[in-house]
Image (cartoon, rainbow, N blue to C red; front, side, top):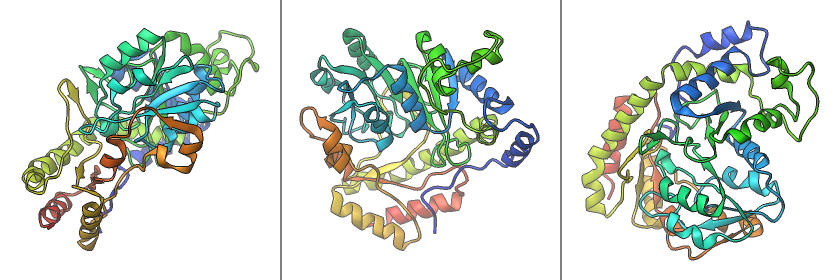
Length: 375
């Protein structure tokens, strides 16, 4: 069977982990943790990058940073993973969902303004499949109404919008290093980017259990103590060591994934046209990172037949999110602003093909021939 995903393995991870184990510093912010953070600050261009145990934790930290209060509202798309919504629900916020664009599966920015009320505190755009939202228009709306923008760039590492890296445009951003992402820290892992300097000092305090421990280690205070709310948001050095090995080979991973994505696109364009399917759309002024290759079938029934056909031929393909507003918890903690014209309909058509760094050329060609032979 060709699995849907295999975590990327470069081959140097064990050596890096061994160095971490011999460092006598495993609890986080050791040499590897700092090295990863420096890599992101230099590569992406942001005020501050802080490693965290997961993207979910990054969003929880963001929700704390913006002082979200019970009754506040946060706007986001319904077509996303539950971790986009949960961190804000945990702070007592109400989630306001708006529709998506059918071509990119990203939030339809033209629908945001009608969803804004006096209770709105933040907008959380999700860069689906590593393809950027319309960030100029979104930031213009946010600035007009004084709202915080938190980019959910879980899938967007090294993608760009108008030559700016995703995650560096909003006030805050969250990334994922889960094993399904382009770069992993060994299963889970995450990163918060801070692009607004007013959040830096407090982010370090909240991340360190509400203490000024980071300032103590930099010699800024003679002792550290409890100064704010917080939690334990430091990843282990082993996670950072695994990730550092991947960052050192980031271009190798990027080029291989892009080669597979381009091979799929070139080989399946004609089949998609014949079947009335849709392939991914990459807008102008946007570069993507080959995080995902999907096909949109004509309807949910055809999708089920298609997934069954692939499985029969030894290929695991999957559909993606069930829109959050249709879930039990979604009905409790959110409301949908405007009409659901595209979110549910488009979600029921989408199938993700296997795409991972260590995928062989033979596996890629087998997927292509099996898709092409579907009737």
